[in-house]
Length: 223
Length: 185
Image (tube, rainbow over all chains, first blue to last red; front, side, top):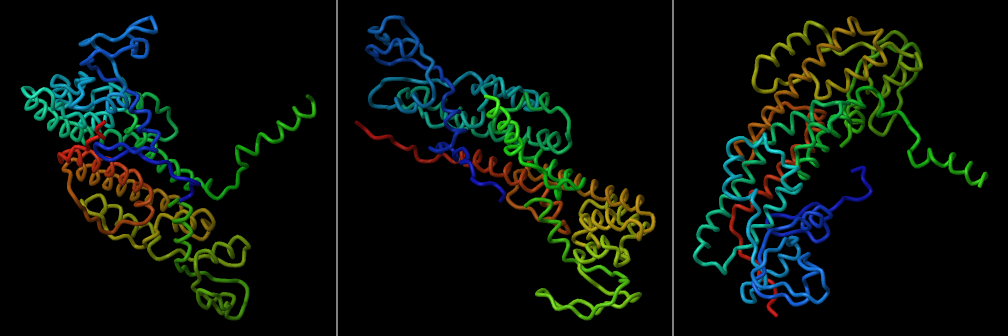
């Protein structure tokens, strides 16, 4: 209510919000993939070669950002094929189901939840013999993301509501971006209440913008 | 909503004062107040009571629930029960803060009262967090909590609604939606 504008939040489910800064940053994360056909003259763009005329040979491994992978992904013209990054695969899923609180989600790609939701866009129809396994995998991916979130929720709530005026960098280091936003909201609620209780809510303080005006005028007179 | 706004709403509550001046009935938009006669108790809203007290024109009488015995009872009941006990005033936190800051000389055993109210507040917040956690863990669809005051809801509300939003987004992934086909060219 006190804000002058509301930032656009990240998108819902498998759709991204076009105007959301979080989604834009998140779609920059890279996916492992393979070039299905030769890509003429694109070797430099994709980091494969040195000359400006080289092409990417068929079948070579690439690291593609998500926005590029989504655009090039087409079942008819086989340009790119993508595979799941290893943190969304079976091995890590068992780690999450064992204890989700231990994992350092910031290191595993700072946009674990958003990226995971976007990966569900790729249904991999061009590999029919593993489509069944992938479908199975993607279904349990979805359940896993939700369960991870639910398991870590308690830790985020407790730490954000109880750490008043302390250095929170140690607590926040292991959270991914979505959880950090939640943590900040919780902290803000706590800080607002504490400052109200101390009586600071009704004190008028000079705005930080205005505090610099006096200093700036001095330098203008001197310079 | 900010705590200051909740405090503003709390200032409409009525409290008894004993003025030391005299004034006829005043007609305000919200209703009539007075008449004020020195030495006779009269009920006024908290905002007026605080203002008069700051100008040393009245003496405040604490509300009948602001008493050590009563607050101890409430605190013990809060600790015993799993659900929330009904509080004597829907704005107990704000009234405590205002009255104890501006009129602590009119309230007997003010420090103990402050401690007791703080204890009750902490217990209630802990219960609120516990129920929010079990709500999320079991992924229930809706929950009902009785006897919460606006201040408590305001402090934890934003966090809880945002967390539930994220859960909803992750949960829509569970429904396999129709795949959106990009344009063929």
